[in-house]
Structures are given as C-alpha cells and as structure tokens.
Length: 476
Image (cartoon, rainbow, N blue to C red; front, side, top):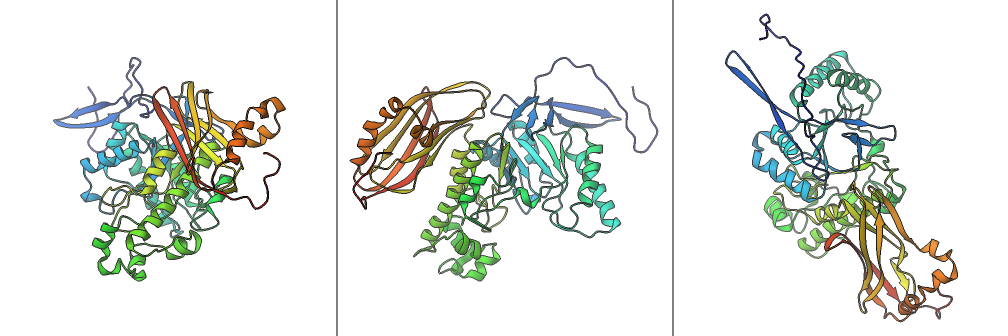
C-alpha cells in the first residue's frame, strides 16, 4: 500500500527478481519482453519491460549484455505525417530492417510514432534516439530552457523501451555545438543514467565521398570511423511512381520539379557522374545502380576495417514522402537496388573481395585481397569458392576457411603470395597458365561462402580482360 498527497509525486519500489531472460538483438538471441502494470484508484498503466545492459567500452564498442556488438544500422524518418503512421506499417518497416540484416536503427532528428518503438522492442532491433535538434538554433536562455524541458520529457516518454540504447542530443550542430550540446547531454544523463549519451552526431561522423565530395573510393580511408552515422547517395524511386508524382515533368525531366522533390542535380551529375540516359527507365536504372555500388563499396570497406570501425548507420532507409532522397526503400515501401546492396553487405557473415584491377590484360590476377568477416559469437568453418564467369568460366580458389567468433580475417593477399616461398607459389602456376588462355571480354568475379548448405554471403564484381599490348612477360 502506497500513501501520498495530491499532485505529482513518485515512490521508489525495489523488487528482488529471480534471474530473468535477457532482451537481445535478433541475431544473438531472443528479445524477451515483459510488461510492468500499475493500478491506482481504478486507473491503470502498463509499460514494456526488458532486462539488458548497455554501455560503451573505451574503444567505442557497444556492449550489449556485457558483450561487444558490431552495429549494422541505418537512419529512419518513416513518414512526414506521423498521425497517419500505423502499427501495420511500423511492423512492415521493422521487418524490412531485419530482412536487410540490420540490428540497429537511428531515429533521425525526431521522436517518431510509438508503434515503431514497440515493433523494435518486439523484433530485437536496437534504437539510437536523436533529440529533435538539427543544425543551429537561437543561443538564448529561453530556447535552452525549453530544449531541456523537452529532452527530459523525451526520456520520460521513451525510456521504458528496452530497444532504445542511446540518446543523442543534437544532429549536426553548428554554433551551438559546445554550448547546447553539453547542456542537453548532461540533462539526458541525469534523467537516464542507464544508457550512453552522445553530445552530438557531428559532421565529421557523416562522410559523403562519392556524393557531396571526392570519389566513392575515398571510403577505403574509413572516413567517419569508428562509427560513421550517415553516408550514402540519392537514388530515384521507380519510374512508375515518378510518373504518378511528377506527371509530365517526369520525362523529359523538368529539373525545377525534380528539385522541389529534393533531387540534387549537382551531386548526381557532377560528383556521382550518373547519366540521364534515353528514357526515364534508364535514368532510374543508372541512379539506383550508382547508389547500390556506393553502398556496397562503403560497407565492405567498413566491414573489412572491423576493430577500427565498430559499426555503421547508412543514410537513409525509407522515403518519408513522395520525394527523391537517399533512401533505399521508396515511400510505398518498394525497395530500390540500394536496399539489396545494403542487405547483402550487411550479412552477419560477409565475404568481401578486393579486385586487383577492374580492367587488366589477359593473364593478370583478378584478385588483390579476399576477406571473411563474422559478427557471430560462434566459430565458423566456411567453404569458400572464388571463380570467374564470362566468355570462359574459370575456378580460382576453393578451400575451407576457419573463422573465430567475431573475426575479420584476410585469407588471401596477392602481396603475401608474391612474398611466399617458391613451393607455395608453385601451387598457383596452373591457375596463372589458365588466366593466360582466357579470351578477352567482360567477366564477373564471384565469391561464395557456405556453411554446410547455407550460403552466407555472395560477392560479385565486374572485371574486364583485355588483349595484351605487349607479349606476356614474367608471370605474376
């Protein structure tokens, strides 16, 4: 029996619970959920309850229930009209996240619909929660006080969700970075000492090579490490949707209409080098193919850099309106090519190939490096098969590769082969001769990694073999 006076108050109650099953992400276990119910004078209240611990270690890793977890995530604004969002759509969105092999999602710069958090609780998806501040704001005390009030309210409203693992005070702050950020993050820590808090998701954590600057190859430098929380490229939604939304402005393109729907022409044409093509269908194909290529390249680089990188959050997942955005799923939840690239590159077990060159003379080695990356907590024995498909098919490599729990391992390196003893190099002489006999043309370098009958990962790269300019010389 609890007693108290009228008005707002609180009462601390401590229960001695038995060992309870823990809430886990879907790939490591089961998201065990309970419900805490309270009744008072005929009124009742219930909140979700899950037992788990979250903290960050000194290297930036997330420790979920005391064990490191590599975060494979995305950003989401599910809709611009939250009142129209539904339980069914939330469940569909979270199902798409799981199908894409993602274990985390960043609710980007807003507090979203309650149904989304419930679905993440139920399906074992971790949530990074932004406080709804984007860029710069008035530097006065009145604004700061109102932001503090709303930050505390956000914790009160969302704090019971076991899927929520991180509070972030501001996205891409400008002049408020070293004033409002520390103030809000201190308030969030005081309100909820059980979760990590970030002062801000800064511009330096949001690398956009191949879109706003540079070339997609710049991802090899692991920009944004250890936890890039935005990266990506725009892609057009399907042609049928564009015609319905833009009408006659869809083709030939009326660039003012496209820009109104958030299309970025400079980045599309001048940085990414996307071709318009001869039809709307070609334009869509070229746009989506570029987004898919960039995401594949970036995520493979981040996965190979595991350790220096502790996770990633691609930008972004679904289009919240009938626009042209960085999303990999359009507003009607139809996946673009980028969705499939995100899904394949985010497999818990990944085979990643690094080509020697994209264009080379007949006889040249097609492969510079080959990697296996596991985010599983158990050892693996994988059968790896590498081969060329094209004018003439050719098997390159087939062996069993052992992988420790959570390991990222380079199991083939052309440079190490060059340095190896002659008896090791001799094993590859028949392959070198077979490569010399290949007819020139376009090929696909294919890698597959199996555990028993299960295909964990398949990586495909386009390469081209050319006629030699000079007679073939010393073998590689």
